[in-house]
Every structure is written in structure tokens, then in C-alpha cells.
Length: 196
Image (cartoon, rainbow, N blue to C red; front, side):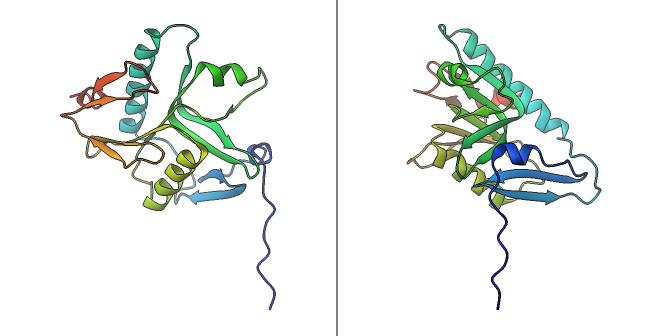
């Protein structure tokens, strides 16, 4: 009996060269393409709650960043493409990311995707997310060395903070979210994220 044929691992560049397919959402994990097919075959749009949270979180981070000394990092939002690791390549889209000044300086003018590990990766849950997808993405972030990951739940209005080698911490709308030592001086009431 023949073993199943294994497809060769793709690099991030080969993945990005794949043609778009209507109704298919793709990402690259350990050099292998993962796909989620949508029933209606149309482009996937984020719902307005998700988009609003991306904008609010990005603005809160930009307000904090404006108070930091130079050189400053950068804040990205809207499924920012990030190559977390190479060989095998892991390419993810991050809802909101904060990237240190050092990482920004390592990007070239030709760079279309962030290459390296952001200081903060924020994932906002969507109705189409599966627990398996979320767990895998969190594992990839932490395994690549992302020091701070926020998992934002719009339904429960909570933020779960993940750090390598630490138990997750849950923050609800009655709590204040901090990010020491990675985002010095950052503090925000969780209620402000959700507009309460």
C-alpha cells in the first residue's frame, strides 16, 4: 500500500504567490497551507464589531506609543501579515500588532510582510474561529517567542493575556489591563476597549 503523497513545504514567498480563490481563507503553518472554505464563495469580511475593536485597540496602543521616547516601534492593524519563523515558514495575519523599534529597523524597504516576532499580537475572536484554529495560532505565537498575546472576546468582553511559560490571565470589564515590562507604562481599563 502506498503512503499518502506529501506536498512540499512552501516558503512565505511561494504562499503569497498562490492565486486568490473566492471563498477560501488561507494561512501558512510550518510550511503547509491551511484553508477554510466559506459556503457563499464570496470574499470574507470582518463584522463591524471585529473591525471596531481592531480600530479601538490600535488607537489605544498608538496613544501609548506617542508617549514613549524615540526610537519608537509601530502599531499595525487589519490582518497585518507577519512571518513569525522560517524553515518551515509560519505566516499569520495579526488583527493588531505592536512591533518594537528594533524589529522595525530590521525591515527593508522591499518588505511587504513583517518579518520577525512582534512584541504584542492581538487576536480578536470571530464567529468563524474554531477552538483548534485559536489554539494552534496561540501555540505558534508563543512558540516563536512573542512575549505578549492578547485574545479578545467581543461576546464576553474579556481579554485573556498569554505569555510564554506562564498561565493565561483573564481580564474582564471591571479590570485594568497592563503590559509590563513589554509596553512600559501601558494601562487601560478593559471597559474602554469595549466602549463601556
